[in-house]
Image (cartoon, rainbow, N blue to C red; front, top):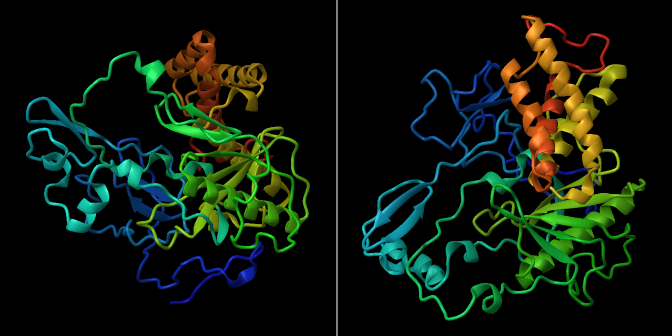
Length: 426
């Protein structure tokens, strides 16, 4: 198996991407057009079957990429976010089991009969007395390197772990007062996304004294950039996870310093850690940087669009502008996933979005060949929603719609002399 190595890494060219060039593992298919009812994902000529609905199969004459054997470095851009259908199956006297795959289980509502039944002894020992979520803490206290990813391809939408649920005793007194969560480390705050998933933010600061002692490259005299704000899906209350996050932050700062570029004033580092059941990825941390001043994303070292799984751009004099549109789409996807009000000018973003939606509304209402991705009624609904959206949900609402608008601009070469103005043009 031949290896492909990262260039521009803080650790030099010696780190493998665990990517095989064996063409037997991946089959490219001619690009085809799909509608919203099609559960296949197409990226740059490759078809990947979505795992969300196992009953939906591709036709026998279409070969698919095995999701489990897919190159862990390679990511894909999806036209729509994949969702996992979570079924709720009731067992026994009132017990409820959340089962992502919907498979029936017999039980009387106890933890052992609901979850441990049929598991191996090793897995039973791991899970006994703990939830699977607690056991899936990522990170090992350090990373070998950070590798670039795209906001649209973060793992926050991946299939969730099974969560055992059973009856418990409610203690006396108010739980809000008497059963508080463990405090977050200094500088960290927890936020809950409108969809329900928590995420964590840390202010720009140096790690606590001695936390990184003995980790890779620490105390080796490496030049560092200034500390960065961090946003992540991993809970920093776990000491090992927090150490892993801080070490990934440390490696990213080294990479920024070695590539000698100026950091935007308001830069934010996203870090993604990987669980133990992905040994090829676990030694690494996925990352990208968000530039809130210029509403784009960037990386600490040079990276090619095909290595990211990004879309191809128009070459030549328009290449920078076309690429900016794609990076703008990715930036607003980041804000959509991690909607912190402080990161954007809500009033300005609101006005820009209304301007574009108003244009689309008029264009699709008066032209049968409009390139608008939304119908007249959809545009009208979005304009109405923006006018009545509660303040606490405006950042997410604006980010979701602006990300889709930026994607439309990229696909239609917005700003190019040959911009696509008619939907009948390919």
